[in-house]
Amino acid sequence: MTSTASDIKPFNRLLLTGAAGGLGKVLRESLQPCAKVIRLSDIADIAPATSEREEVQVCDLSDKQAVHHLVEGVDAIVHFGGVSVERPFEEILGANISGVFHIYEAARRHGVKRVIFASSNHVIGFYKQDQRIDAQAPRRPDSYYGLSKSYGEDMASFYFDRYGIETVSIRIGSSFPEPQNRRMLASWLSFGDLTQLIEKALFTPDVGHTIVYGASNNTTTWWDNRYAAHLGYHPADSSEPFRAKVEAQPAVPADDPSMVYQGGAFVASGPFGD
Ligand code: NAI
Ligand code: 15L
Image (cartoon, rainbow, N blue to C red; front, side):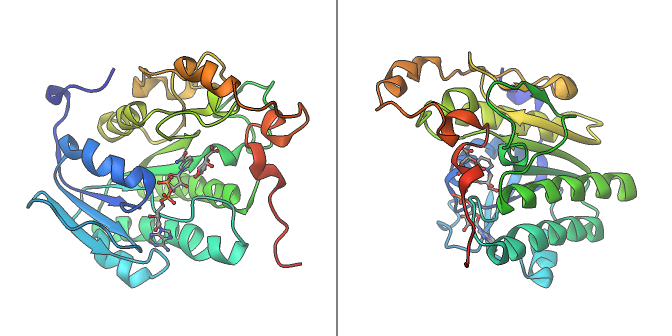
């Protein structure tokens, strides 16, 4: 169930990174009740502010000084910016690895106490689809991209233990308007459920560093959220209404990575630069 307006005591200023991206555009609208002002940031062009409740600041996450400036005056950070697919390591390094360090270091210096980190199922992508795992399962990254999200989770853990900055790391499955293939019947996360999860992540007290799998209430499921029960996340949507449409797609061989591994095709990406 999505939080009601009365559950929410909005932050004064919330920073949303990745605001020009697919999910950023959705969250720009849906997170409005969470803050009096949302500061929208991306390296790419962002649509101009539509009211005094929005601020727009272009920023490259790999630029430490720029991120320090970006975080000034914010109360919480929804960190969705970065490279969102598998790419050569050098591209991942600046945006995702240096980027997440810059976000936490700026949070520390400016006294920000809560970060929501867009982690990914690709942190555990080498598990097979017949396995059911929880947040304590050893990570099995499937790509440089997955490794960068794994590093981000460790950064979150460190900044909580060392500085008391709390984080909810959301291992997002596949968040798109609808599931696009058979794998996404299990990994799909609706935009409504993503919003609910971020609201819970922002407003639940004492989260420490919590890892939660971001999936809707799908009939096929690989992920057990027992260690995130305190968030009270109860997904309202399901991939089931899309099953017939997805299963009408051309058959895929049973040994195709998209049918075998939780991370799907990411497990077979690369190598780069040979
Ligand atoms: P997206 O690629 O549409 O958006 C990411 C945004 O980050 C882009 O607008 C891009 O310009 C920006 N960005 C890239 N490098 C940057 C840099 N150096 N400095 C500042 N901004 C930079 O991806 P999407 O789908 O919106 O995902 C948002 C976040 O959620 C990403 O962190 C992604 O890894 C994560 N995620 C998304 C999933 C999904 O199903 N959509 C699944 C799992 C994780
Ligand atoms: C991700 O982490 C990506 O950002 C997104 O584009 C999808 O590929 C998603 O995972 C997925 O696994 O479906």
